Length: 283
Image (cartoon, rainbow, N blue to C red; front, side):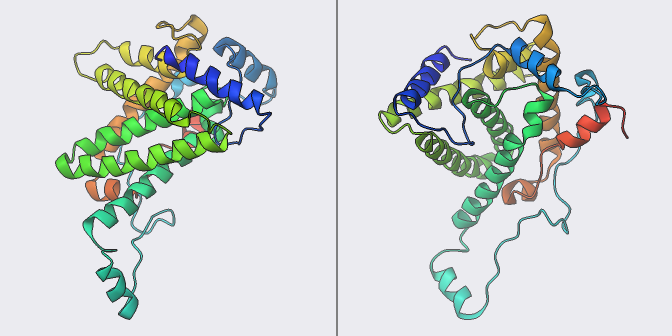
């Protein structure tokens, strides 16, 4: 993670304390604890009768398309209108390519938020839900989608721009709701630099010529590390490697997901519940 993370989080936390604000559930700004402490706490809370998650068994399955079935109740459909309403909406360019792309980008972003907001993702990877971890997971999943969209050429890049604008607006709203209004533009610029820094790091780490341990190291720095250290300790290494396998598998799955599903948002990220069950030996 870039060094400015600490400065940005410190500023956000200070504003919250000065204004005696209660931060919302979307982005919780709290003091960072060490990763080892979080792991220890999670183990203390585990029931003796409940099998622990075996990270070493997770995210090894062969990549497959993430596209939803046509009859899936989770699918998103284009609104259909008839008669005068259809005519008026057509005049207002509701059915234009740009409008359809914006609606599709909103659905894609909702898929991202759904995965990042799941309590299970924090449980599986032993993460405390803080502003830093939530934002970092959001950036990781944005990278996964933007990378896939680039495979569609110009159309995918344009769609990705709509997705980024939706993401940026959402982050600004979340930070504002957390009580940060003074110098909001400056802090948003800091978060933007972190976003692009992470994207470049992920792109480099996923290249064929990259070292096999590069992606786990990048994920450790961007998501797990409190101080920006480049090397995870022994206790955290397995978790960083598991998230790297998750990211690589999602890259493969999204590449197998067809263009129509990507541009309409009719796909779902890998089910962490299924992976959790499999890690315990449940089939």
